[in-house]
Image 1: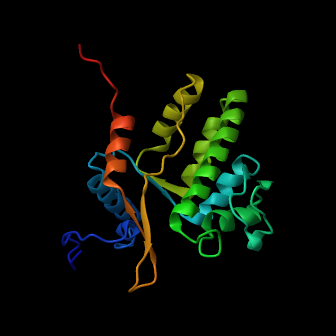
Image 2: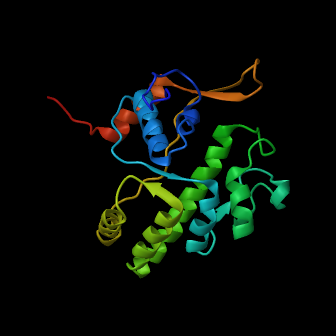
Length: 212
């Protein structure tokens, strides 16, 4: 962006950098949306973003997420295979630590993110099935700690429909690719496979048909 706030173009760089140029959260969200749209070749209608610090309120919402530890985490006194319920003091480190855990790569940390999201969804589903009013509590909590492109009222209505009508909620999907260490910077980089993108788009956004 120039001094007048006009976009100056684009460049192939680390994806997360698209969220840090302007200092304005809404603009940063839109920049990331556009970057992912360009990467996947699809249109994204809505966005949500949350700082790591918001995970404490999310974790507390379900009484602590229970999951199986993927790698040894000495900072938290956890061993691979342990089944733990994350406390408020543990959860930020659990989802944020990278270099000292496993192979130190971001894809490995994202695998822990998937475990956490799946655990949260499982526990939230159970709470909502017992009390549909939990949906409003959940949405209110998320809107206190995250930035959404849609209004809170719209989200409450949509989430209530999902839980009331028993829609299937799919687990997060990770695209495959190649992870390397940049010799110049020393940073680990991940390059997504184009075939993986195509497979995901076809499997997620299209339905198979049979021609005779």
